[in-house]
Image (cartoon, rainbow over all chains, first blue to last red; front, side, top):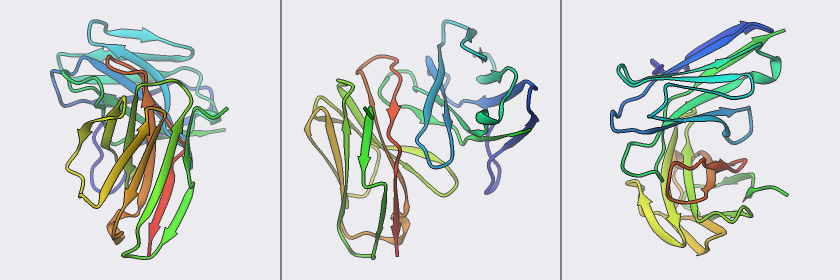
Length: 113
Length: 113
């Protein structure tokens, strides 16, 4: 969700557990959503995307859920691994223009071995 | 083999100087972007070019001037650098109009002293 103050929302999980990262988006006109993973010192890396005509999409070990009624997006990571430790961003396309992505503030996921 | 490459990776300079960051993509994409990521990890679009034409300019100070000599390159020139320009700058590209995934470079960490 949205960060408060100066700190990123954080999620700490044990290796092997499932992780759920949440995101509240702002624009009800958005019809395309995307999740990125950013490891320390690297650029954002695509994980999974979903269009607004779907409410669920699955990838390898990841699932994205979309609830348009409450403008909520979540990323589920199954069997979380230490390599999943990163900052996760959701992004929305604001409807009309598919060029412009508006990013959320990010969630720091820490996986404990 | 790097899909989106930026140079330099690190840039340390004095206030008032002029500097450039270069970006190249070998994905054959039509659209390229510049993002700024601040110390709180907030990622915000600055500019976007589609086939060498400016399509997004997000109220960035005119000290920042993007230039796209061809659709595989998008450079960012910054005049009269200020302390507040210190950030990580990311270049990205996408195939073009539509709900397309944006692919990011590794970033350029700019430090203005």
